[in-house]
Length: 82
Image 1 (cartoon, rainbow, N blue to C red):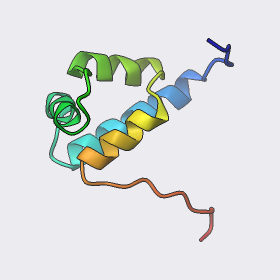
Image 2 (image 1 turned 60 degrees about the vertical axis):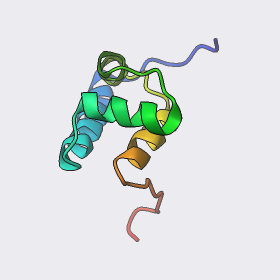
Image 3 (image 1 turned 120 degrees about the horizontal axis):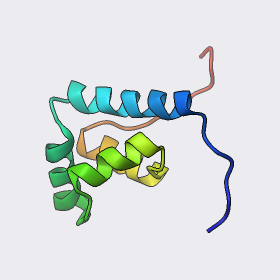
Image 4 (image 1 turned 135 degrees about the vertical axis):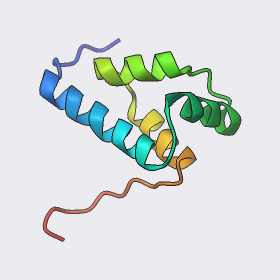
């Protein structure tokens, strides 16, 4: 596996809190989100594994996209100031 530079703890916490906030805002929780991921993508994720990946800052972007999808969101990139 390629080596990467460590992610600052404050950035990990910012991403974790942002995703958890969106999950809660969609009226969901880790258990329900894991269940939806399994139903939609045949994922083997559990609520514990999702929480661990968020807490450690190791959740892959493709999984964040899937979480957004099952919650009814899409992630859109736009330039700052637009």
